[in-house]
Length: 91
Image (cartoon, rainbow, N blue to C red; front, side):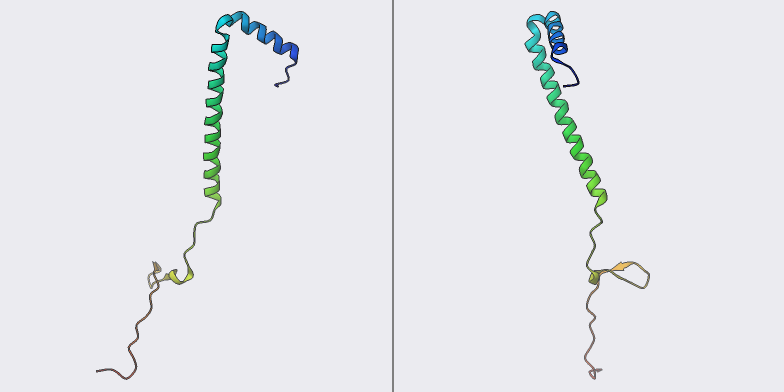
């Protein structure tokens, strides 16, 4: 735990009791809540960064080849069937 031995932890606890006395449980509860909130915020921020990184890494969805034709001006158009009149019926 941060490289602290049992003797160092005992000294820190004794100093905390001398400073805070009877309010020590209240102070400990407040510190615990604050650490919990910071941890939740950090996890939320990490998830958002991961999602953003994954969105950048994924290629854009491609449309099927039948809908990716170009018209005469070079712009994309939607392919549709051509209607051809039957032969010999030119009246």
